[in-house]
Structure formats: C-alpha cells, structure tokens
Length: 409
Image 1: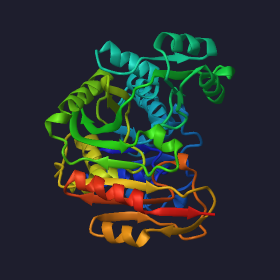
Image 2: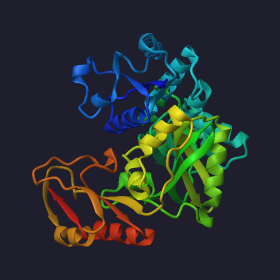
Image 3: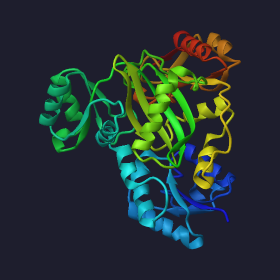
C-alpha cells in the first residue's frame, strides 16, 4: 500500500513543487498543506503532483497544521508529515509530535533553528564551532564582547542564512547592530565569535541519521562580504571532487553534527568556515539549501535530488548514486547602482566564452528595475555553468565577473 505523505508549505516556492513531484514519482499519496485557499488557485507546477490539498490560515500554527493533517488522515492514514521550509521546521515538528508520526523531533527542530542552542549542543559533543551566546540586552552583548573580543557576528537567533547578520568591529558597531536587531525591545539575538577564513557548505540527504547523499560547495567571497559590496560578483561553486582527501575532515565533522543534533531522515544544509583556527561549523539547517542550490547538484551529478529525498522519506533508502561528473556553479553580476537596467558591456565576449558550459542564465532587458544586492544570488544578472574540471569552472566564473559590466540608470 502506498505511503501517505503530507507536505507542509508546498505552495511557497517552486523548489517544493519538485519535492511533491518526487514524492508522487516514488509512489506516495501526497497531500499538500499550505496557505493557498483552494485547489484551483494552486501553482501550475504543483497541482499535478497532489492527491489532495488542505488550506491553513497560519502555517506557523502547529495546531492548525496538525488539524489539517488529521483531515488528510481521514481519507487515508498518514505516514509522514514533512516540510522543506526553514521557517516551518519547528511547527511541522510540533504537529508531527502531536500526531505521533516519525521524523524530525521537536528538540532537533529547535536546535536547528536556535543558533546559540545549536552551538552549545555541538560544543558539548566536542565539535568545532565559534564561541557564541544568546543575548537580550546590550549589557549581555558587551560582556560577551569583553570575554571573546572583537570582531563579532550578530544575527537573529532563528535567521535564515546571512539575512540580518552583521559584523561588529567595535562598541559603536555593537550598539548599532543591537538597535537594528531589536535588542532594546527585548529581542534575543545570537552573538558569535567572528571566524576568519574561507566559507562553504556541506549538504546531505540523511536517512536514519546516516548520510545517504553528500555534496560540498564554496562561496567566493564569504556571504556577508558578498552581500555588502556591490562591486563584487559573488560565486557559488559545487565541487565534483567530494571524495578527495582534503575534504575528509569536513565530511567526518558533518556526519558527527547530524548525529549530535539527532537529525533523522531529512535534508541538511551545513555552513562552515576554514581558516587560521581550522575547520569551524557555522550552523546547520534541517532543510535543503536555498537559492535553488540543489539544481547545481542535480546537473553536476546526473541525479534528481528531490526524488532522492522523496525516496528517503517514503522508502528509507537512496534510489541512485551521484555521478560526480561535473562541477557546477553560479556567478552573479550586480548593476553598478540601484535603478533600472540601462545596458551591458562585455556581454558578447561573455556569451561566447560560456556558451559550451552555460545551462541557465538571467539577463534582464533594459528598463527592468534592479533588485537590491541583499536579496541574494539569483537576482539581477547571473549565469549558471558546468564543467568537468572544477578549476576551469572557477576560471570561467571569474571571467564572467571581471568582463561583464551591468549599467543601471
């Protein structure tokens, strides 16, 4: 008998449509739970993969999610309730617990969302991560700064990626960052030791706490630097050299993080730094990477990773192996100012250079409004490339970033 899976927040992003597709393709009955008011209003990319739809007014309300799942269970008993969305990991876990279903526990979901608690659990397991604390007053932040020293990183306790994160170099920065993050209103924030070095991420699909699929990617430059300087052309590069010796420590630590936090069967996204202090875990989420990064893994590995996650959920095993055939990456080129796209310089040379290796791009027409650079990596102008050699991929992305100029007016 096919398993019945409820997918929470399936209507939020197109990536989650792919998970619904994967679930359906591996034989599950799929009920979507989301904010869209009716089946007729569902996105065209989602609707074909659903057997039923349960609308919920507030997806942050675990009770409302559980009630929707109970309605779904009247049609056929429910086997799993899952989500791919960072913000919904905790309420979905709470609904899962109320229903007595297997999957990510409430404790693990909370640890994956609360950065100071996460780091405390990792340090207790002997895993390398930055010094950190939760603080809800300027005095607590100043005491942490006195103990650890500047620079520091301040960020929301349950933030997504680099959103809201700030580098703090002195007390003036600390006061300004605390004000911006709402500390004066009693909001608790995460304060962390600033870790210098190269930044990347380690992504997996775990089954029963064991890594079934793993991928490694790099940021050039680190995220906060990339989001602060529009003159940079930031890159994300996914390597096809995952099994080389130089990544063995990262892979070992990544596996231990999954075990330490009690992550069972889930997608994971772990940010890391490597620099003068060695390898340091930044944070991990029990969900896929954002920015449609899984597309890079699919293209580079001749693999449908959404289907593989569905296989983990429904059958408890992988269905295929990654080929590691291609390194893949994306490079973004920012407009020289906010406004509207006025034109391009060097575009002909770039198109000629990347033509054999480019599989997706965005080139807004002149007159298109620009996006603020803090919006992320898939805004304004970008190219996604693939190449059998990782170093050559990086060279191509460097060429795009150096040669192409995007003018705005």
